[in-house]
Amino acid sequence: MTDDISRPLARAPRGFVDHRARDLAAEREILSRVSAVYERYGFEAFDTGALEYADALGKFLPDADRPNEGVFALQDDDEQWMALRYDLTAPLARFVAQSWETLPKPFRRYAFGTVWRNEKPGPGRFREFTQCDADTVGSARPEADAEIIAMAAEGLGAAGLAQGDYVLKINNRKLLNGLLVRAGVTTEGQKLAVLRAVDKLDRLGPDGVRYLLGEGRKDESGAFTKGAGLSTSAADAVLAFTAAGRADRTETLDLLANVIGGSAEGDEGLAELSRIDQALTGLGVGADQAIFDPSVVRGLEYYTGAVFEAELLLRSLDEKGQPIRFGSVGGGGRYDDLVARFTGEPVPATGFSFGVSRLASALRAAGQDLGRQTRGPVVVIVFSPDDMPAYFALVAELRAAGIAAEVYLGSSGMKAQMKYADRRLSPAAIILGGDEILAGTVTIKDLDLGRALSTGVTDNAAWRAERPGQQTLPRAELIPALRRILEA
Image 1 (cartoon, one colour):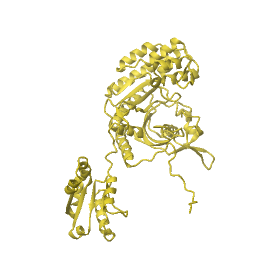
Image 2 (cartoon, rainbow, N blue to C red):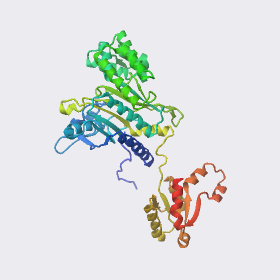
Image 3 (tube, helix red, strand yellow):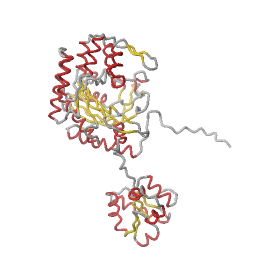
Image 4 (cartoon, rainbow, N blue to C red):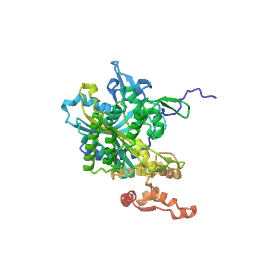
């Protein structure tokens, strides 16, 4: 007999990932630690709805050839198009424009939440993920950028990164603009071609970028990318600019002044970086945490001044023993034109955002898994359905004492129940058979200790004889004994 019922294939949409307790615990721990830093800096918690009107989101996604301009959109019953937010900044700009008169100025907020992007998924590139942002809206001072950078550094440290595990790289779009003026770049198309070429330095190196700054480059597949069309001297100037970064921020500024000094916009960018340097020094942020790197290019049509990127320097290996390079986990900068989309008036703003899941994955790969301590509940083993009232009275007592606990509600025997408790990473299992109920006792099996000891056990008979971590004690001593196990 054939089954004619049509059943759906169990599968998650591409770019969407299921998260179990360990992953969620790591992300929640990161958000808790970073939020504490942001609040200590005086930033206000803030959130918006998941949906925004599509025209309010702007067109800053790089994957504009996808449907709906890179967002997931739907039409409301009033025929207005709405879209799931693709970041946390565009909704902030809408809120500021809507509420500017009633807000404290500057408005300092932090937010974390899920964002969605209708982009082509790939390794490490998801359509749904969690971001954590902090922004200052209403201050044009370079010191506002410096404070965001300092706060980002402290937040990364609070999340579990040691100094030397990361570096914040800082640049200024005004320097780039001044450089392009000196290089004779006049059209917007040529300007974007130069910036896109610079953005490929990590991947192609100076020689590959030189081709892209000139006539163009043919890659290994034979595909040709048209270049920016700069002269040899102009391309040299661009590459000298990108190579001016040094370990000392002041030395970098001196080198940059020699490369682009004399351009009004470039000089303005240098002055802003100098003030950022002074503020970072006052905040105790050294060059081991934040440096000036002229090769950093972010948001070609988005940022208007300082830009910064958080790069992980963690050394770790994948499951095959190959080195992993995580690269950037976040970034930000100054975006003075975003609110003006709604009001017509420029409102200065600066902010930083990092990917929570990506940071959690990097920490786990480096052996710093914040979710590894995720514990399951204490499991009460079931022997007889007739004793269910006693089991539930026990579990209620444990929960009232603040101990996570559950009665096993499957239909398997004791061996399978113990395996269930072990898979849940339960700290302990409670054995309450008829004899224990009559005697007013309870047996505790310390599963944490059992896991630790099992790594060195070679003789199964000896293992069974020793019965590590198992004790029978009066019922009144149960909760103190469990607390000792949990605290250990």
